[in-house]
Length: 376
Ligand SMILES: Cc1cc2nc3c(=O)[nH]c(=O)nc-3n(C[C@H](O)[C@H](O)[C@H](O)COP(=O)(O)OP(=O)(O)OC[C@H]3O[C@@H](n4cnc5c(N)ncnc54)[C@H](O)[C@@H]3O)c2cc1C
Image: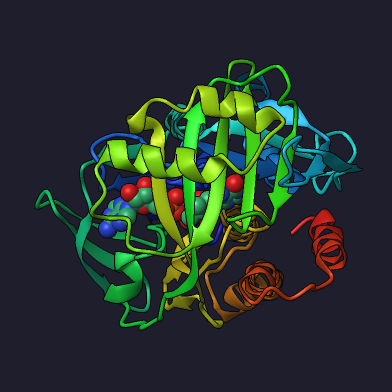
């Protein structure tokens, strides 16, 4: 017995693919529409903390993640000096429990592929290059019209369509997504042997420079600056800017810079934030992941929170026998406070840097990690 027999998931990112897989695995008929023509993900690499690994293990893809990623248990802090001096190497909190690594880095497209393959394997019917054009909810279901002219009726519609969610807009929810004031350069490249964990360099001409190994042969490196309009730069100019900014950082960065030669592997984006107050549902349509909450990646928790939303929602839809207010109350009780704590802490960490305030960074990071160590 479950609260729904069928479900539509809008969006095939981390949140959408995960909730679709968990529901399908439990016997719910799941359709997923993804507006992009294929499962791609820009932005080179992703840092997966233990609490996201816990969800990925529950999804049945931990072995794939482990095989395709790079696991590590410490975090380094380095100085922006000519030697790239290692100030400290700290053990990272294992937020997924002692039997999972603290962190795994992996290429984003690989994670996207693993999640989509899992959804297909458990019977999710995925249509790429497709979205909805109309949602018409009533007391017992949601009538949906799709962009390919087809239609369907669903017990629940899950909007997992990211930061600029069309589902959110179609529900008439006006959520202001604000620029935080920082922009990030990211590049994907080969991993020098000296890079075996994430190191962060605070200070120098940029706010943060860092890197994360994503496999035996790969890493992504990043530099955070004041947000500016970089949209008019050609790819070659973007590469030149990132190389120039990186000149202040040494140690492993010297080797990373040597391989920073391919403009197609450089990406620039602004940090943005928003947080939807409860409720995240309107009747039988609910928002999860970035559609409901997003924040700068100062704690690398966006995808983790999206995955936790997916897990909690799927658990409730499968374990309960009615889609009623009690189910939504239980969902919000388990998700909104926790997601807000992550968004607030992530924004605070960015704000301290923007204002050049010496806040209690380790204290905030550890308090958040301690909270996240309890399963969602
Ligand atoms: C610079 C940067 C670095 C980050 N680094 C990390 C990190 O290291 N670790 C971490 O955990 N998080 C990180 N994040 C956050 C993380 O990327 C997001 O929180 C996460 O991808 C959200 O997943 P999602 O499934 O909710 O949304 P998305 O990943 O955005 O997926 C939404 C999907 O919906 C699709 N879609 C959109 N509109 C429609 C529509 N109308 N119909 C159908 N499909 C649609 C999109 O094509 C997309 O595939 C970072 C974010 C940024 C900006």
